[in-house]
Length: 107
Image (cartoon, rainbow, N blue to C red; front, side, top):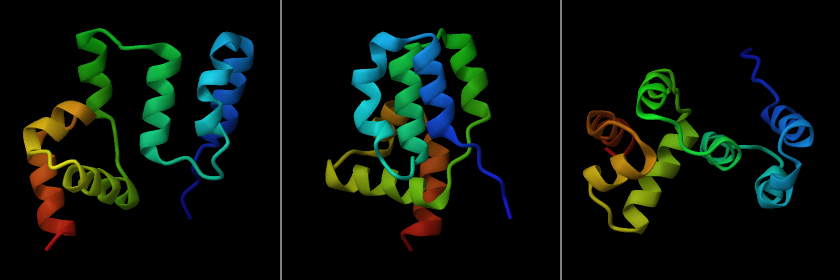
């Protein structure tokens, strides 16, 4: 069994201690029973803002997506009729990863 960090508690503590002015903005996401990977990425952007290019590249290499999130991204692409380049820019994912996911999950 894999232990998953309690991201909801982590982000609530961060908001309470360092960014109380952003609690109302994040409340809708934090009210969800289970946070998806996309929710966590969104919270991170809201709280800490956009990062510089170097740290964003480093962090991107260490991101992992669960199957549910991958399917959610692919459904988003289909719903909004986006090509691989557009969806890659939106979610900061490589086009190669998207192609592999499509072969694995949409076949």
